[in-house]
Image (cartoon, rainbow over all chains, first blue to last red; front, side, top):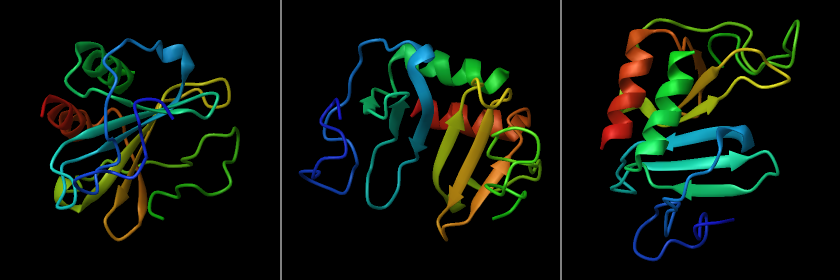
Length: 75
Length: 75
């Protein structure tokens, strides 16, 4: 898993210990998981599962992440 | 599962046979799955997993779905 995702979270029960800001093309996506802020993790987490099964933690604040989710939302 | 979700898809390999347009409060969400259009399913699918584990297929075209995803995206 890229972005040290899904590993043992150090300080809380967040799923992502680190996030990637580098662009990943939507053509590679199988699906996107959005975890809202919750009691166990204080930040929004966006995890993209790629077609090869890799899970990547991406930065919810990156513009490309916002755009991709909005585009998919519009269709 | 509500919205006849995750059942055996009738005509293609979409995960949702039907979607719900009725508002569901974000307080109940555990996480949101967005499945982009793909070769196996021609429509975008948005599946909300509630805190009690229930999976609900919601209408990606509903304004509240778009707003919820955008709000979570902004944080």
